Image 1 (cartoon, rainbow, N blue to C red):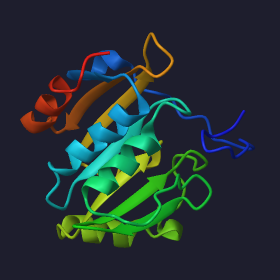
Image 2 (cartoon, rainbow, N blue to C red):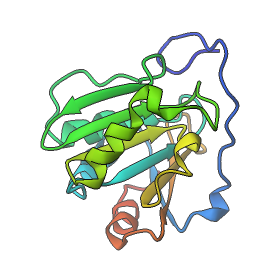
Image 3 (cartoon, rainbow, N blue to C red):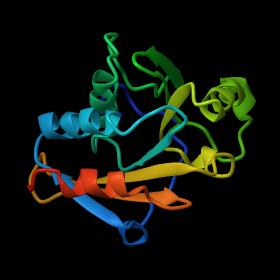
Image 4 (spheres, rainbow, N blue to C red):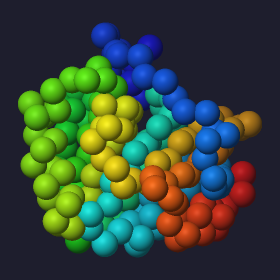
Length: 182
C-alpha cells in the first residue's frame, strides 16, 4: 500500500474517517481536474484566518484539492503531500500551511511541528491552514471548515461533504452545490 504519492505506508497511525451523516452539505467531482478545480474555486472563499480540515481515505483527492487551492491562491511552487515532512508552507495571495497528520498520534506534541506559530498566524488572519488527517488538531482549532472526500461510483468520482465548526459558512455550501455532477 502507498500514500497516494507512491510512498510506501510504513507505520501509519489509524485515524477514523468521520461518518458522512455528520456533514451538512454535499457535492461531487468526476475527475482529478474537477477535484483540483474545486480546490481552485475554494481559494476564492479564503481571506486569511481559515482552517480547512480534510478527511478521507488514502488516494481520495485531499492533496489534489489542496494543489488546486494553492493554484487558486497564486502559489507557483510544486505542492506535494506533506506526509513525510508533516508540514509545508506555500506563499501566494495568502500563506498556506499544508499539514498532514497521517503519521501523528492524537495527543502528540504539536509544538515540535511548529503548530503554535502557525495558529498565531491563523489567528492574526495572515495565513490559511489546510490539514489532512486532522484529528490531532480537533481539540486546538475551534473555528474550521471540514471537508470529507470519499470515492463515488466511478473510478474518478468523488463525493465531497462539508461541515463547519461552529457552523458551515453558506459560501461553502454554495461551492459544493455548484460542483459539476458525477
